[in-house]
Length: 432
Ligand SMILES: [Zn+2]
Image 1 (cartoon, rainbow, N blue to C red):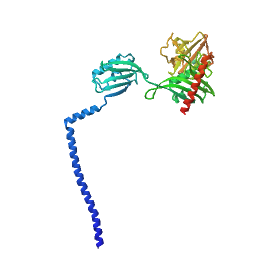
Image 2 (spheres, protein in one colour):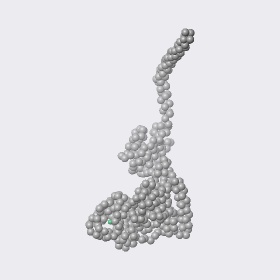
Image 3 (tube, protein in one colour):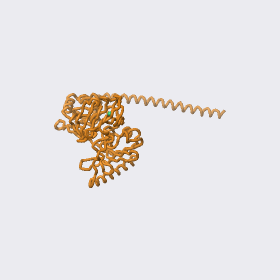
Image 4 (cartoon, rainbow, N blue to C red):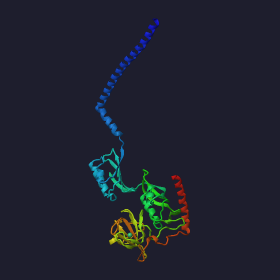
């Protein structure tokens, strides 16, 4: 019995302690909460104090940075006025800024994706103290306020770019163009590459599956490390059936550049075999059944099938002697290169910018675009070469080779070539 009692007390003492602790916590919590409510009320009344309100407002205004920069990129339908109207400034200031912009000749045409940057001074009455507008990816106009005279001065400035040399190589699986695009090469570099090889390579017949190319060219990067433009090709190689056709860029005279093979021989010839890039030779020179007329007729030119709008190049330097309608040839251009050679380009959808009778053109210049005008079954370029008044097969054309470097020029070329070879192995090791 004694033992039992003792146990009874022991159990009750645990219960007692639990009840005791609970009661104490409830009491202390309610004291705490009432204190909190009081504090909150006090805080609320302080906040409502008008003087404090004012100083808090001042404090937060002063916390805003004095200078801020705002960017805007123009979209379709924008005008300088609509862009200015987006700014959080008063009407008078908007008017002033717009007048400045409209006075600037280089800003007459607003294109899509032109970048504006406005710099605000939040403490000044007229907020904008500086702004710049791009004219293209490389240039911009800067307007800067001379605070003392309260007027803006403007100047054109070149943006800072970093030149980078890039190396690309690839196997040619279907076409040079597709393989180059797949390697991330910019279109204007591909066009230049095709132009360089256009003298000696017939892109339809000479390129086989698993031929390959290598290329080093210049890229220009902006502050955000984005490629904004491409420069020159420094080195190119086209490996056709295990034969390398290498080209090195070389300055043979001050400011005169050309491309030479490893023996110092220029690739340049009077005329190109292929005055079009990315095309498929669809009909060669010779006798054939005419696709529209039906009977067998001599085909006095070479046809290159290509999508409508593909640029057509002048195959050599010369003078345009015709740019107009040629009957069955549709829109056509005829160029006189020298006393011996003339070339004709037919079925164009439209002519190149500024191409008309009498203008001089440079080899590789765009003179028109592929179409299907005149007597034609589909978009293609009909290309003719006329030698001493006679139409000849452009693909069998054998023209004298260009410049061959000799003496000091050759010595300098060898040095430049070694430098490019070292650069190439350096870029290859980096890309792997
Ligand atoms: Zn034809």
